[in-house]
Length: 398
Ligand SMILES: Cc1cc2nc3c(=O)[nH]c(=O)nc-3n(C[C@H](O)[C@H](O)[C@H](O)COP(=O)(O)O)c2cc1C
Image 1 (cartoon, rainbow, N blue to C red):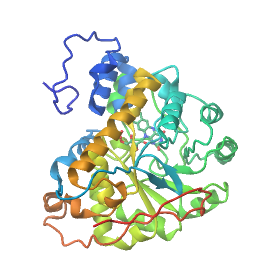
Image 2 (image 1 turned 180 degrees about the horizontal axis):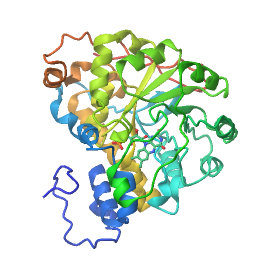
Image 3 (image 1 turned 60 degrees about the vertical axis):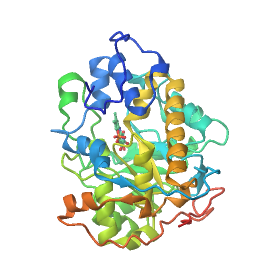
């Protein structure tokens, strides 16, 4: 039997009591974290995290797109060394995945966002708190360990006084960049599970966020801005042309436009239509990432770093220890999978489509397998250009 439509990997719930936190030792992967949260949280809190827009077609597509992709592994290579180090906007982190902005961490644990800050800081990975967090910008910022780099997410509020004040608070609290979410154009998506069980989301999103407004906003902060929630190849190209240092491909975990393509499909479109973009701008992506294989697939398609939305929120039912366990699970899955694929260095995967076969998906998405030129090398921001300290440039080994 599957729970919540997730793959059946043999999790035994027979000793669990509904409404009680199960032993953390029972959790062996990110899907188990979701099932532990489903078992523990109130229906309202669980629905708030789990919900997605309308018929949840995009939510499901995010989770199951990976089934249409085959991963190629190579023998006869030396995989005795492992390296996951990844620069994001010129800052060094220990893994190619980060904790994406997701609202209201306090629904899972009284430690709320601070738990995520501490787990990310100890592991040396990036956390990007949401502006709709339980805790304040300042409280989240002050939970950081010394030298820990965080970015902050922001929405485009129609109230520019609020917007300016929040951007100023983020800068003052030491955040190094802004992920500006551009997919809630005036409104949130309509989410049935939230309507049935939970309370409404934030309001006050600007419905007039044109390129002129965007240019005004760029003058409101000295921090680098990365548009998040870009969901067509067209807008990826536009962000490169507008001179952003990076762009974040995301359908918001299926919570905004039901029917929107997955990050994988958008990336295929970018390869087909605007392959030069990979040499111009850093690309981040998220949606349905639950396994190391999902991360490596996105890297092979030209992504620099991959976001985790729901999984860390679910893991937070165990507090900081849960988030740490989730990070450790994904790190071990990554180093194991990379060794088995014959390339122990994460830089060897970026933009290297030798590792993936997307023909079945291309047939499904474009009507026929494409002759896409996958030869471009994804870009990374040069050291120091956005205040970053150390940085490495990616170079494929194949
Ligand atoms: C409960 C929840 C709250 C979210 N809140 C925000 C938010 O405040 N700002 C934002 O840019 N994205 C938000 N997102 C979207 C995530 O940043 C991310 O794009 C998405 O969750 C990735 O998909 P995944 O959950 O399948 O990993 C939220 C997602 C969830 C599940």
